[in-house]
Length: 405
Image (cartoon, rainbow, N blue to C red; front, side, top):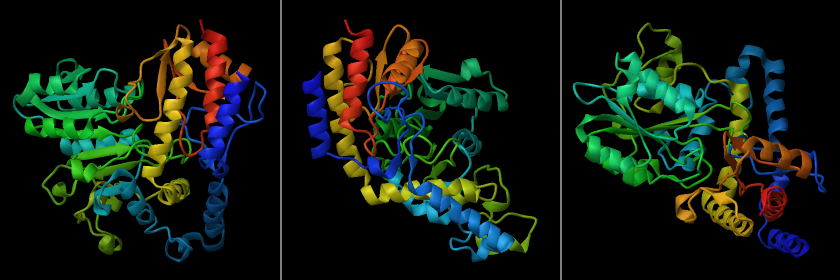
């Protein structure tokens, strides 16, 4: 194994990431001071810049009180606009199609109010069979809200294109995860979107495991709507403020939509009129004023992505993930994630007998943090911003010791 470790160190020297920009937890076990952190698909690490920039906002609050809405260094009233363009660049959208707000499932519900409109025989919602539970709960509750039987309305499938062909004009909404949370498979977002539209359905995407992980071109692909969280690959902290996308062709459309103070146009917001005048942008789907202290880490993170760029991150991600795959192959553990780099992000999912037990052993005995999904999946995510080849080597060596044949 020593030769393998030397090779990992050499690769890190030749292909460094940006680990120095992040705070890496200390290891609880093993021979190294820092954790080999491979759980960024669950919660990203804290950027070092977050603390100082968040303290600036607290200082502005202390110094200015309510006047900070207009007089802070980064005024709070239009603060969410600071996040619009970098978020749009990240997901391949126009700025007017993008808004940072709320949490992921809240955004999905607000968007489905507009875009899930069952009528006549067209009532079905297509989701992947291994959809993240929150997505499953959300679509089932939307069906029930419309007076439909969720068991008959929600179509679960491992082959979305086949489901679209089979159910055709009965489908009202296709809503899938861009990268499957369990297997790490990258879905064919443009192909499925085109097929859904050809069938007359609306197509939306949960990009929780895609945003900041794989390149996205939502506007070009014609996606109707999408939402994503910011606490995984976007490293903005637990429960961080999420994002939403609405294609520009829906701007100003006569769609049902829940509204609040922040969904009216900014220029007339303080006229305190009783009737909303929504802008012809994704801002029309906002409801409440932005939480500044929660948005500050998102802004810090998006600046990192702008500085490094998704093309460079994707290229390093493919190299890191391929390296980890090469280390796992000789061990004989089953990897359920597609081997084709074009069909996966940076996550590799392993099928093992006791996923939870292995995850705990990796952490406490070897200083490797992965995560598990019961009953039999351990997920390893070498995140290109801060993970190293040495992290991958440590994880593979620990797995070989614990479960290798």
